[in-house]
Image 1: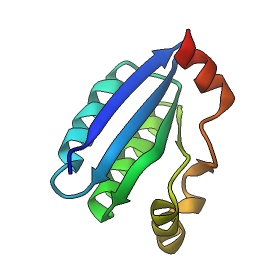
Image 2: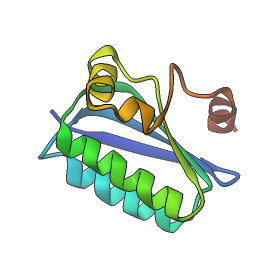
Image 3: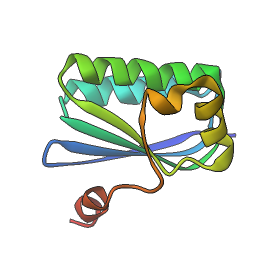
Length: 115
């Protein structure tokens, strides 16, 4: 399955919407998008995972790497709206206590999306 990544930035915040499966084959695409985004220096990034069907350990490592880089820059990276399968992976691995996980995309990001 193909991985689609779209990013919207507004006022130092970025919303990264991911669609598809994050695995060994698609993770490099996501990694390159995060690398590009983090060069812009947003203070907060929210990853909308509502359309992610599957995420393996390679994908989780990409998310962890992005989180680490954001923290090094003094920023924050949150995960929003993970589907049950992805939420279970976060819980089983203990990553739900590493990431701030929102049940849905925070309202301020939805407002920024429409502007």
